[in-house]
Image 1: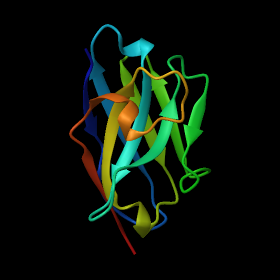
Image 2 (image 1 turned 45 degrees about the vertical axis):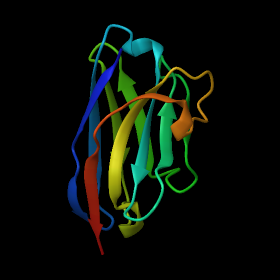
Image 3 (image 1 turned 135 degrees about the horizontal axis):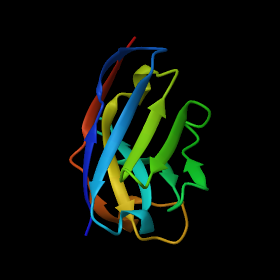
Image 4 (image 1 turned 90 degrees about the vertical axis):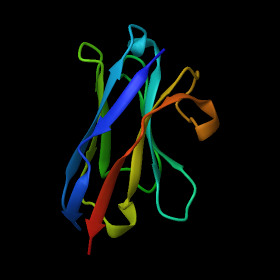
Length: 124
């Protein structure tokens, strides 16, 4: 079992940066694909980024490609999401997720464990 807790959300101006962290517990952390999803008010939860078990492969939603970077440190059981050039449309609750899927094109239906989320607000 994996328990995940997000941190690092907050208020930032458009064009600014934030780094989200996801601390995970559980000895099997390194065997999971880890991902970030987000949910804006009134919208469905959507995929943002995913990273393979060893960090060698990553996958991003088109809307964040080139601006966001996902990484992981298995020694620290932590996943990060570096968000640069933030836009008001990036405003959402960001969720860390663990999936025992095979590929990185994960959806909400592939997730085994969710965090409770951290709010990111980008002002214009």
